Length: 412
Image (cartoon, rainbow, N blue to C red; front, side, top):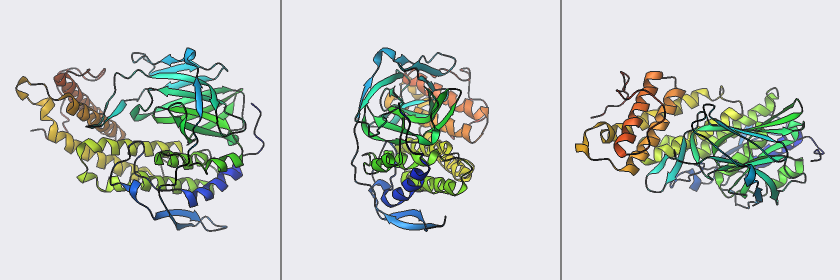
């Protein structure tokens, strides 16, 4: 690959200003929900006054009219690797034909899938694969791409993010690199937030992954980023990822541009979460896990942009609100798993929906540092639900003997 002709510093500044005029709000990431901000327009956006860092409100319309690029990726199936859930490392590793080392850290991964009837449910039997990409036809960059990988099964989700690393031979200037993603083998191509470093003869691209699809890294020039802005992806969540992608790579010491990160992440929250979080108390229980997924996706973006400290109070409040709602939902249904039920097995789909709620309750309890006993309780609850419904039992946790003294549910 030949190296890019221009650094991306000016691209980042230009991109941020262009996107301020052309972007649009949305409510959910992978699951647009009826009666959410995905149907709203005329909300506020922010730009800066010329020559200042003072944000001013400008009107924007959502969604941007889709005009996506679809590329065609060829997969190197002979180099595909499959995850072993019993591997103590909790990771999967592979290598592309050009020597790129690919690793996927799944230690906190809890797989989910969408069920049309009951919302999100566990996908513990999903066979996770990682397949290097050997070619991409139609990619809109003069220098093509440096490396890419397809994670399967396509569309698999997670309660908590997984971490993808591409270790690419050669040292490339990080300021000239950009992450990208696409659905399937190339649909709805868009820029994706990633961070980069280069040393010791290699370049490292790091992605935080909440759903499985195609991910890669390319070396680009200013005009190519601006050209991509003229091709909004169809999925509004992908539009939001594309706006954040150039900003994530800005160095910590560039204080004025760091403010642009914060403004973009605030805008992302308003698009993806604000309305759903404000009406959380009235949300149907089988939709709460979708809101929790979108919240964790936003937190993942905040983390990737190194802005956790700035948003820490907002994150903590959101985590507590979601945990309270999930606890109330599970209290209403817990007798299915913890009651006698006359020896009748509960409905598997309903229990699967509960198991997804329990997974998020456990994750949020850990994030809020509520202690090991609380985590043990959620594992116990999950164990009892799985056992009574005849579903696969959770692989790790406390012994089958009781929940301990920490019982967050008022279970009749």
